[in-house]
Image (cartoon, rainbow, N blue to C red; front, side):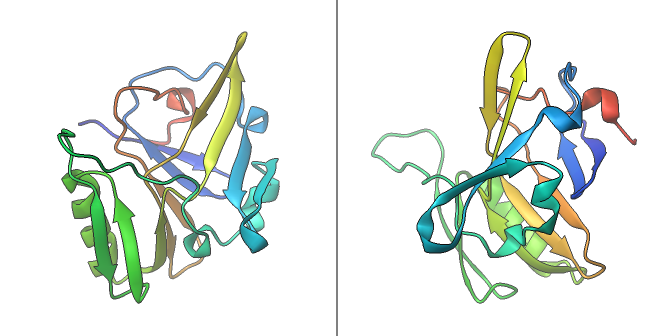
Length: 157
């Protein structure tokens, strides 16, 4: 899978790079669970101050008999807590984040990205947010192919 790294005010966004972005980064809003369990929505620029590695998941990961992927919980030594995963691929990514000495914290399904692409409203919850020791944020999203329109024209690599 080809990944694209996108520089954003709040860190780096890594996507599969399969689609073109037709809106600027200022067109995004971020929704996350704030204090008291209330969903907070703010601009992408204002989200730079949020410690996403400490927020609870923005959505629950479904689990039901007969499903084709394997959700579960991974015990993270870095977080001293369980971290949800939606598939074994996400579990493996959580394992990589947990063993990366440069990662000081991470969270699964940390926020929704909201934007309009033409006349259509879009949203997507990335797989993980990780905080590096130098304070930068990393958004990790393996993508399901459902919605990967974030940032191909902003690629840094």
